[in-house]
Image (cartoon, rainbow, N blue to C red; front, top):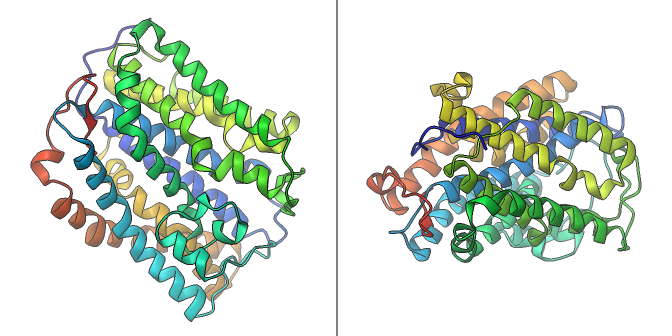
Length: 384
């Protein structure tokens, strides 16, 4: 085990990494929007989205466990997470409903077969409960990218129970627990292979997969819990001086190799979460190690940190921004992608500055609490 300098209270490079994850999801949806048959772009572009979501989930577990402290309570933690998620989500959800239902804008402008959600799907999406209902008409309701927030809500609900148990694991056993979390994540698509359902016609998958298999392996919240737990374990490993032996660039190369190899040899349900998980975890670990050593300055610049702080807002608005530019602009793929990116960046800045940041400052416990230095592995609750 290579040792690290003493862990600092802040990890700005991991904040910057959040925007990289959001940008991966943007690239995936831009490829979907700009390829009418869903098959003319390289499949690896579509899989950047699932890899980005997995990076979000691992980062979430890492940051919350890293910043845990004993003086917090479950009630205060849940209040902060609700204030962080719901106000911005509801603002964007209302905009989506106006665009899709009142203005008549298509929910997807790329021509792929699509299940049109009913009003119940939109309403359950407002509550972030829609992926708990195993019906495609619910999964695609409202702002469809927010299915991942249902997973995050489950993580937050369980964190007060999970963290004390992770904190009690002996440091020398942490690598084995991390490997176990990866193994559980690989078991889920293996189970999914034995399930039926309606075949999905999406050409970019280039292989058979059903809606039930996709739901279990990708969008069902309990199925994504191993990624969150893995992030928590990595945070404890980081605090106990475990240093990543693989740097950021080799980790990124390994992630690309896993996706490309997986496309060639793995059944499709394995590509949504299991295949990219181990290299994604190595990326998080490598960035945390580099942060402790003062390297990777480009992820620690004020611009990178700001983009990371606004990455949640960007994630919320990027899909409707792409759809709106593609529908109302209709001037080709390059204009749709560039215009969608610029619109999403502008809208995310407004959403972060006018909704997310004020709500967190007003209702999440105040600046003094947010800036408080976290304790080490004490089994307590996290500070956002």
